[in-house]
Every structure is written in structure tokens, then in C-alpha cells.
Amino acid sequence: MNDQEFRTLVENLTPFLFKILTPWSFSKETVEDIVQEVWYKVYRYIDRFKGNSNISTWIYRIAVNTASTWKRKVKFDNLQEDNLQDKNPQTDPSLRVEIDELRKNITNALDKLKSSEREIVVLRVWGEMPFDKIAEQLNSTENSIRVRYFRAIEKLKKSLSFFMRNNYAR
Image 1: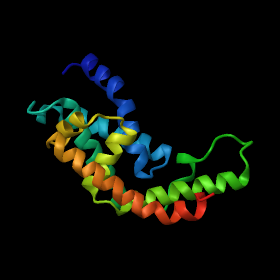
Image 2 (image 1 turned 180 degrees about the horizontal axis):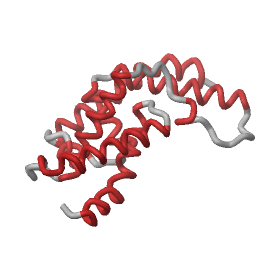
Image 3 (image 1 turned 180 degrees about the vertical axis):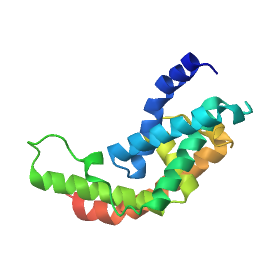
């Protein structure tokens, strides 16, 4: 792979990497660091890519493994403030607290899922990937991915039901 091909790959896949890494509860700066580390690893080990799968699948696995390593290094109890904080200074402070609490509860619910379930939810919801592409990325069948996704969504609903009932029952 020449430098121009690599630059094109970086330009095309960096937005996708940001989409899939942001829900891991990392700050914006941490996501940027992880993405940079992913591209460093891709550049360094591109000769090890065997071509048995799509290159985006290989890069996706590097991204997930790198994020998992970062997550193990530092325990995140809640979302980093700059990751999801409303940037509008006019926002009602009570609304901001409510939004932060909702985000914290969503993150906690996601953390309760098995890593394979969380991966599917993140790819589907934040990565906006269709089931067939997720199946390809995870080397599984589309039907299996659909079943695991809907089971994970049910678990999330159950985890969030108490919060939703107490805060949004009007």
C-alpha cells in the first residue's frame, strides 16, 4: 500500500472510527488518541494484513482491541464531561443535570452488556451499520447478529426501566 492509498484509507475510515469509539465513554481527546494509535498500528502492521477479510474489518478489530486496552488501563465510572456535555451555555442547568444523568445511566447499562452485545449495539446505533455489514465485521451470520442485537436491546430496556419510570413518567 502506497502513501496515497493509506491517506485515502485514513480519510475514509476515520469518521467511522470516531463513531464507534465515542460510545465507549471516552473523552473526545481520548478518542482522538485512540484513533491516532489505531492508524499507527495499521501503518506499522499493514504487511500482516492477509486479505482474508475486508481491510475495514481488520481496522475495526484493531480499533476495538485498542479501545479495550485503554478501557482496562483506566476505569471509567461515568462519561467524561467533555464527551457528551451540551455545548450550549444557554441550556437550563436542571436540564443539563437530567441529560448528564441519563447519559450516565445509558453508559452503565451498556457496561452491563457482554462485550459482544455492546459491540453489536454500538455498531448498529452509533455506527449506523446494517445487520449484514455487522455480521461481516464480526464474522457471524446476519440472523445471529439480529437475535443478539434484539436481546441486548431488551437488556438495555430492562436496565434503564427504573430510571425511565422515575424520571420520565409524566
